[in-house]
View: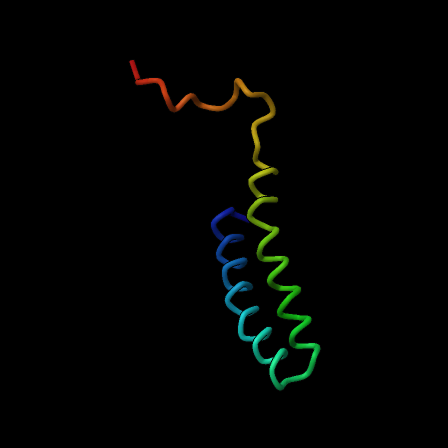
Length: 70
């Protein structure tokens, strides 16, 4: 699966989490609050996990952005 597709799904999870937390915390069943909080945690942990998964193995593998092209 492409990284942009995963990030799109995570964004939708974050959008779904906020109303679930709000409804569950005010008048709805407590399971909605817990589900929304779980979605929020998953949505916050996936982008850093993707970044770590694609990290270069050695510091020399990273492109040097400070150099001008010759």
